[in-house]
Amino acid sequence: MAATVTEGTRPGYGQLLRTPGVWTFLIPGFAARQPFAMLTISIVLLVQHTTGSYGTAGAVAAVTGVSMAVFAPQSGKLADRLGQRAVLLPGVLVHTASVSALTALALADAPLWALFAAAVPTGASVPQVGPMVRARWAAKLDGSPLMPTAAAFESVTDEFTFVVGPVLATALCTGVHPAAGLIAEAALTLAGGLLFAAQKRTQPAVRRSGGGAAVKQISALSIPGVRVLIVAFLGIGSVFGGMQVSLTAFSEEIGNPGANGLLYGIFAAGNMLAGIACGAIAWKSGPKQRVIIGYAGLTLAASALWAADSVVLLAVLGLLVGLCIAPALIGGYTLVESLVPASARTEAFTWLTGAVAFGQATAVTVAGQLADARGASAGFVVPLAGTVLALATLLALRNRLAPAVPGRITARGTSGMGHRSRVTVD
Image 1 (cartoon, rainbow, N blue to C red):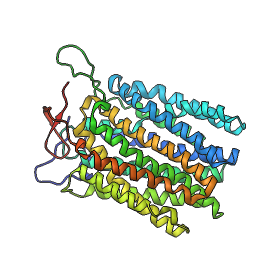
Image 2 (cartoon, rainbow, N blue to C red):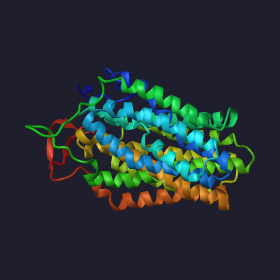
Image 3 (cartoon, one colour):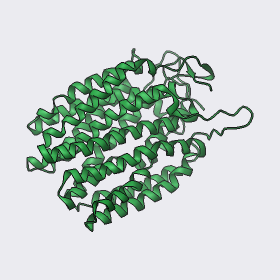
């Protein structure tokens, strides 16, 4: 049942969180997505400890990210067709086993090929809880002006996990044991994933193809705007990956490894604060404009990272970079509602999440190699390069971010901005 907003009222977080039934998936969803923020940094810290190389650590983390990017959209497509529970239950079990195997191999000083072999199923089985939560919001708020607020709320939630996750993983790896971060990640994935999968009432209805008036199943990747957003989200991934490795290397260079968690937490906190503001502001501009402006600001802020030579300066720049990520992320996820039919939204969200993971994986590898060869400052060039590419793509192909025309106006729905939305009909 779609949520309603009284005419003339301003959609806000209070109204959003009073939507009936949402807390039944929000709380388990938060627990289930927390491990995702711990995975990459935990792999980097463990493998760097056992091998002494950021490049090797980055390569193993990159294999995990690439594997996730390849398999996440397939997971989303299966969730749209079979239901989220059917995908989550086997996924969390495979992920827990794969992370355990990767941890054991790293501690046993296994050869690199063995670490890569374990990293593939580790990434492929990462539970796509964030996209699944967004799909539940989209189903719950179908046609409601609250949808942009929900997108902002999800960005805040994501970034809160990225404030807590890297700090927790770093504290566990440096204060308890180098493998403690991955062990905690596996345990949280298992517990949180099973709890989220148990919330059957709020999962989107399965839309099966064939027969009568059934909706024809289409791929989210067939929609031009989604392809543009995928390239753009690679840029966001390059920021996350480049920052993780370069901040770790910088902290090692100055002889204060514990500063890594603090610096990355400040960076993520900037994103979270901007996400809160994005959801509270009644925007006059559309999500497409906010995406482009967000990327422009992100590129500008990232351009100075390589020159930072102190913890204070790097913290300030990291905060600015974080503040610019939220408008880009929220605008992109909000655009999905108007670009993609409901029957393919989980897939669309997982394509974007996979793009972030792939960009992060590539950035971790390249930044790790640069940090090994030329120091932490060289690693910070990676976020700049990624955001420049993303911004150039958005500017060149911005017309594709509008709903497809010709199309048919859906009988029941309106977009998150309160207008009738067009969807492509094959």
